Each structure stands twice: as structure tokens, then as C-alpha cells.
Length: 509
Image (cartoon, rainbow, N blue to C red; front, side, top):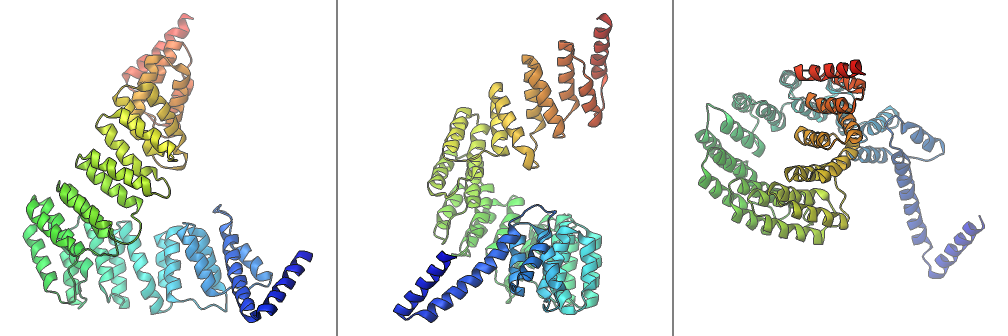
């Protein structure tokens, strides 16, 4: 308390001496308000278990006499969404909606609907949409719901929902039509895409760039269409005064030419697309780089890579992964290595996914020593291996029959899969098990195959290896039979023969 009083006194003295009392007070008030906002945000962000609710924190904040605005609550909700804490974001938004002094906007209703989709599912989201009383709210919220049906590839639900939107008079722009075209492309129902375009024309809804791109894609994929149909759509787009033909449309046309085996046409179109690229965004550069790589045009890949460096902003790890993947695909490991070193010299945080591209190239080309050297190098640089790193190394060791190293890498891989959905390929799993049988490593074989079982990767081939090892060691196989039963693996005649041999051992003893 004494220190607080002394500090306050010093502030008053300094303000008086320099004549800036009002300025100091104003800055202090702003800092205090900012601290309060940050404090509430940090309180809510401070716990992560999904079972806990942020509502007691909010209520306690209010009970202590603090105020909170609607804009601050929205800011907190958006922050929670960014960190994928959708249940907490939904609770904060719901709490805000229940306050009498807050007015819920159509944008809030759209955000709530998206959170309902993530927390509860599409059925509940559809019910919420129909309960929105005003057309402005429905107009803001319909697109997230339609996108949900498209993501689920639920044609019946999406088409039925579009009918509702027609009845409500909400289909007034290209966005819902584009979503339906995406759905038909995803489900390979290409013949329906031109029908959507016809519907747009009947309803006097103009096509935008995405509409034309989707239409071209459908014509390129459908059996009854082809390159001529795609070119016809592209000409319509060129003649549409309301639409500007950009790099994305040209890339779409080039992709159609490439799939049709018309490589020279594709290259000419991509060269035209390069002229349309933005000087503020790198997205188009790497889309076209990928197409050049598919066309085996290394010159185009390197030209656009150099051009992308002129765009403002840091080149992302995703960009480096793209260029390295393309160069590896083209067989230019030397150039990939050069660009990798360039990334290393500029990276702020070591992203193992970048080095994994080069690591995989070494392994696929039988350069296991280079792969091991790169792996040690990344560890020295502070890189943290992920499951893909270990999978690549295991494959390299198995291919070169360096099985002791493969076992160590597999151990580390299995230890890293607790927090992800990755599972090692069955070929590598079996190779390690076969080596353990060959070496007679009974204890580790049991430990290893139990781990494989717990990951849901158990197979008859794996279990037969362990049964044979138990038979050789004259150890009971009860836990193996339990694993076989739990995995519902159907036993073959060889397995029954091994089991009968166990009975012989018991009888002879």
C-alpha cells in the first residue's frame, strides 16, 4: 500500500512539474481499459478443458462491478474460434444473446449458426436457421448452413435447402449457386453444373469469376463435354463485361488442357496467367508453379519462384514446402537443397515439415546416408521430428535392411502418435515384426505387437509372428488370442496349426 501511495505521489509531482496532468490521466485511463479487456480475455483463455464453462468467469466479472461491451464479447468469441475452442465461443455468444441490453445482429446470428454446426451438427443448425425470425438474419446465416451440407456432400439436404431459400427469396447472388456447383463437382455429378448455370440465367443472377471457373471444370470432367465445351465457356467469360479474367480462370483452362494431353496449349495459357498475378499476394504464384511442375516445366517453376520473392511479406513455410515438393517431383534435388538452405537461413521457427520434403526425396532415391545426415542437422538446428519424419526414416532403414535403426525409429514414431491420427504403414509394421522374429527378440516383440494392437493396426500376419515366437519359447498365447478376438481377425488354417502345436507341447510336458 505504501509503495502504491508513493508511486501515485510521484506521478502527481511529475505531471505538475511538466504541466501534462490531463495527458497523463487520459493515457492512464486508456491503459486501464485495455488492461481490463485483456484481463477478461486472459481469464477466459486461461483454462482449456472443454468441460469447463467460461460463463462463471463472465458472471464473476460482472458481479465485481466491471462492465463489458457487446463488441468486447464478440472479440472474445472470435478469439476463441481462432483457437478452435468452439464450445466456449458458443457459450459466450449464447450468454451475450440472453442479455436484455444487447441487440443481436444478423452477423451474430450467422456466427452462432456456424458454432452450432461445429458443436451440435447440421440438423440443429437447420432448426436454428428456421427459428431466426427476420429475413435479414436468415440472409446472413443461410450460406454457412449450405456450406455445411456441401462439406458433408449431402446432395438431398443441399437441394432441399436451396428450395427453401427460393421460397424465402434469398437466392439473389451467385454464392449459393456456386456452392451447389462445388457439391456436384465433388460428387462427380458434372451434368448438373450446366443446369445450375441455366437456373442462374432464369433468375437473372449474373455469373462471377468462380461461377465460370466451376463451369469450366465441370465441362472438362464430364464425358459428354471436353476441351471444346470448356473453350466455349471461357469465351463467354471473356465477353462478359462484368467479369475480369484473372490468373485463376487461366489456370483452370490450363489445367483442362493439361488433363487432355494438350501440354503446349497449357503452357501458353500459364504464361498468360503469369501476367495477371498480383504483386501483393503469393497465392497465384504457387498455384501456377504446381501446374508448371505437373507439365515438367522446370524453367517456369524457377522463373515464378524468383518472381514470387518480389511480393511484399515473408515467404511462408507452406510456400517453401510447395517449391521444394515441385523440384523434388522434377528430380532436381540439388536445387531443392539450395532452396532449403535459403529457408533455413531465414526461418524464425524451425518447421520440420519443410525438411521432411528433402528427407523424403533422399530416402526415395536410396540416399540413406544423406537422409541420416539431414536428420541430425535438423536436430542440431532445433527441429522437432514429427510422425512423418519417423515414417520416412523407417522406410529408408527398412529398404536398406538397417533394421536396428528401423526399430529405434519405430519406437519413437509410436511414442509420438498419442496426439495425432497418423498410423505407420502396414508394410513397415510387418517388416519390423518379421525382423524381431528372425532375431528371436521375444520381450520386445510382445511389447511392440501390443502397441500395434492398441493402435488398431493388428493383423493376422502380425499375430502369427507372435504366436510362432511364443510356441518356440513354450510360452502360453492367451493374450495373443485375446488381441485376435478383440480385433475380430479371422484365423486361417496356418494359425490353427500353430495353436494345435501348443496343445502338443502341453501334452508332452
